[in-house]
Image 1 (cartoon, helix red, strand yellow):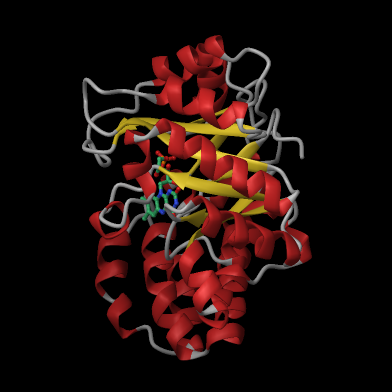
Image 2 (spheres, helix red, strand yellow; image 1 turned 120 degrees about the vertical axis):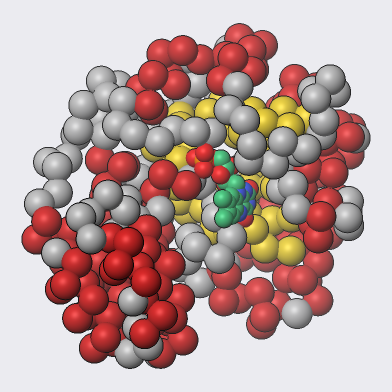
Length: 310
Ligand SMILES: Cc1cc2nc3c(=O)[nH]c(=O)nc-3n(C[C@H](O)[C@H](O)[C@H](O)COP(=O)(O)O)c2cc1C
């Protein structure tokens, strides 16, 4: 599994489903990941977890992200992920929300780096596909532990470590501290380090690589309403893909809605409202457009809204 030199779509709960991931791949993302899935949930109620784990071969290379706190459970769930045909499994060690940290998972793992190592080790042992870890700087300011956690993860066989350099307590406030990505790469020059956090506009990914030496860049929020962000040439910061015309943007958005509608019917169209709001950012008249989105409840209404927007 080669991550180097790639722009990676970050896992985003409730957002990065199979349709959105495939559109991001088409726009230039080199690797995609599912949203986080509970390891315990996957083992206890596999059918319920499957809606997060369906994928199209066109998305490859694709990873599935697991969260959990029990090494044996993560290992068993990672084996199930391998069985489903995923190219790698990513372990969530950074989710800050209480529902996840309360059970000892996500960012709560950062307070026990040796547990992080045991989790990666079990996932490697049981899945036999590459295992990656996605971490934050630490739980709280003053107790940054990303170097220790990465050391444990790499020693346990992690193929890559992604760092979102904010603490758990920061949630999404303040700026991502890219100097911590540079420190991680300097500490592990021969390992794959993926930088993440606040890559917002063209040129940012190339700047992150130049400033930190990271091997690949993961983009989350900036892809919302803008899968074209993955069209950047990683090395130069210049577009590798032609800037999309309004017609091609409109065509992609229509395809996004049509595919979601085909999968999920009218409920999918309601889900598309948030994507439409994101797609409309920066377009004249976007505020009044967004105010009308509550009325978008059918595929026809969705299509009319997109036609009006462009
Ligand atoms: C709505 C939302 C959902 C997220 N869901 C996940 C998730 O399921 N797993 C995960 O590891 N990180 C998740 N994250 C964190 C992102 O993957 C990423 O690390 C973070 O947003 C920083 O990158 P960015 O500045 O490019 O957005 C989520 C973030 C947001 C805003």
